[in-house]
Length: 309
Image (cartoon, rainbow, N blue to C red; front, side):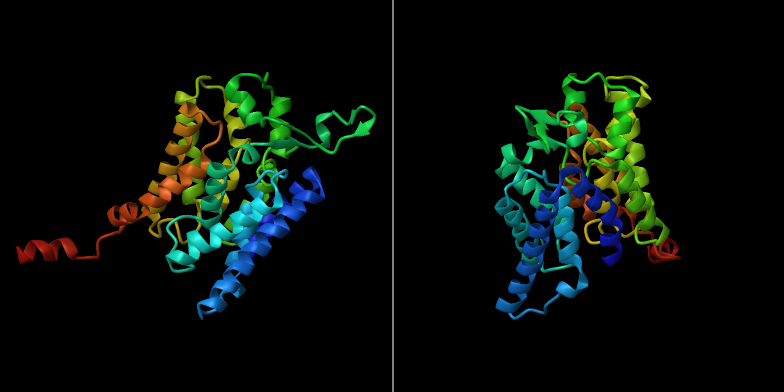
């Protein structure tokens, strides 16, 4: 868990640079709410206090990185409480939850407060620094991914580069694909996560988008889909969650393929430009089936079964 926190620091740091001190405030609120909820639950119900395992900190930080910087702080705190209390602790605590707590909380907030959850901000780099002689820190608007979907953006490689570096609108932690890839490389080198889920996820989504995306074999649009939204954050940091993903090698591959297909369906045919959160959660629900069909047979099991017949 500590390694995951370290890997998220580049994206978190860039989010603070990109959106200002309020991004840090959102992170502080979500982390405080997740840690305090787990602490109070253990104290009130006489359970073992487990905040030292850092899982609550990871959940709070991931949740913050999935939120827009303009979200009211009480909503951010409510999301942290929901993530720990409802998604994690009511199912038995760490190792028992069937979906990623941070994603569960994000979807809860998206359904409950759609307006606030879809109000994104651009940073100072968009060029609108002054309005009526007042300097602007940010201006709200649609994300590049949403503008690509509705056709309002003339996409070019310069815009894709902005999306890769992160000087665009979006949630606090999803804008910079570069920072997310740096963190992902750290986790892969440390062997904290397996390559199977993120590679199969991204490869499957790429094939699906090139076939059904409506732009043909256009690598510029594919690169924009990779860099925009929460695809990189989801593929490397949330789909790879130990508790909610398969443990078998083949199961990880199947799980990654499921995530890629569902993300492609939501992005290509859904009303919303995003789809990573719901794709991963639905795939989490399929994990028991995936593990059942992907568990390797014990050596000699087939022969022994035939012999008994």
